[in-house]
Image (cartoon, rainbow, N blue to C red; front, side, top):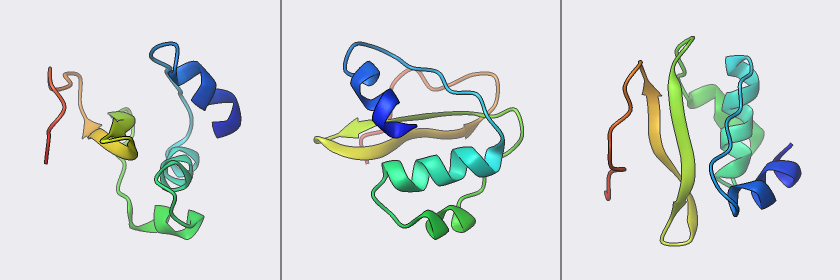
Length: 76
């Protein structure tokens, strides 16, 4: 899945909708962690999260938000 999504991310935003378990594993792999890292990630049903890059490294820009995402990603 990531091999199909990463090129599209270079062209703009990409939305993925799936079950939480799958999205947690996708997030772990995107962050260059082992898939088992997904077990330590909490993701609520119906939440919105944003993955992207910070300083050219894969990063979580927003995680587990409700209806409203922050306007600017955190720079922590």
